[in-house]
Length: 293
View 1 (cartoon, rainbow, N blue to C red):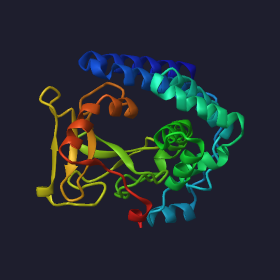
View 2 (view 1 turned 180 degrees about the vertical axis):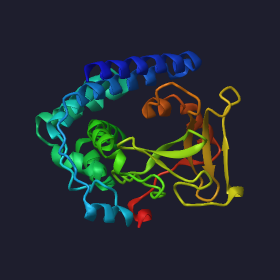
View 3 (view 1 turned 90 degrees about the horizontal axis):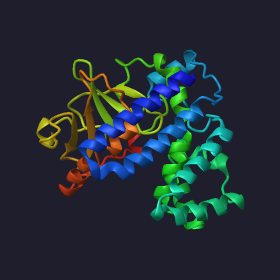
View 4 (view 1 turned 180 degrees about the horizontal axis):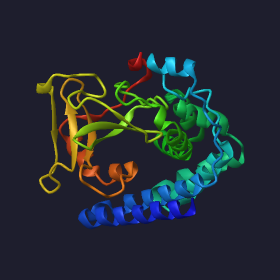
């Protein structure tokens, strides 16, 4: 386990160094993300997860569109998540812009103004109202709360996803939300012979999805689906856009690459594509629970 963790961190360092060399402007944010992922790797080696049994009833539910992990029935290792949350706060406190809010957050923790069980459950349940209310109460930005909450829970759900990946039938689940935890995608990836996989925004699981379909509104009209990329990168990193719902998702082409695919690094290392897409009037796609039906 220790050797595997060391290998992941070494590959992480190499990958961020390569991206920073190509795009020096991304150095600060990638340095921060590197620290976040390093802390998550350390947490994974001490995790305690409750095995999930996939019996006939759960398999039937999955065939009807329900993800394997029920949002509110999942019992994560709260102690480990809290420990990681505090470590991430320390990492963030070194950032001048975030340090003041982190100080407020630490004060709230000491006063026990955060129920961590509710806090983590709200991430899995995608309860935006909870974070909006907490943000107003603590005078801390909602964006910061969500980042800390998701990344504190992420290693736990990634561990579940690793354990459950063999139970997902890739040729049967063609939905636009994760078959493991039900969360929306935040990246796409081209693998193998060009198959398109969506990458879960919470547990990092990858599942098959049609090449010519918007993962947010289901648009299949090729005239309204296109992509763009920078001349320097060619088609390695690109933004797939939908003219129907005006959303986009970034896609990484890893065909033929032997380099480790690290979703959060790929995301932060392609911020220039976010700027380009948003300048053209597209917004990063977000799928709501209502859209899942």
